[in-house]
Image 1 (spheres, helix red, strand yellow):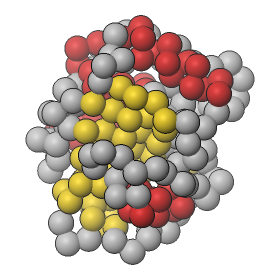
Image 2 (cartoon, one colour):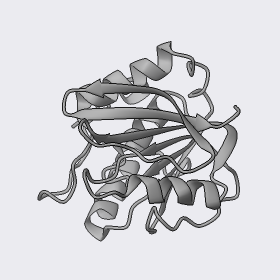
Image 3 (tube, helix red, strand yellow):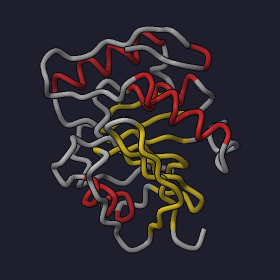
Length: 185
């Protein structure tokens, strides 16, 4: 696995052993960031405050930092994944722009500043996305114009909590990307 674009393009990322982590594939991340760069959100990434929930290796948040995001908060509960995540942050030298929270994404703590862009890549078919989305709203993580990108299995549905609306969705192979914004924004 590697960073697919931006200042660290081609840099390899460490991945935990075993099957507990399913990192977003390079091709999917490349497609996602092309959608962000060429769609209605093209100005969002530069200087963005990013959240990466169910972070695993941190690939999504680190990709955002590589492409101009200002800072990223990574949320990961599993110790083995956090160890690899810390190693990836150190290898890229972004410890001053990245922080790791040991937390359950379904019960987020408050942050000093809301996020402009949040990635959710929960384990497939475990119904974790909706509770995490509710937690984002309840803990005040979303700026008024925030974009939330959720990755699910292609055949999964997504129940949205009140306050979020689907702006776009794309099927990419075995995965589906859901692009969500706050209702009324």
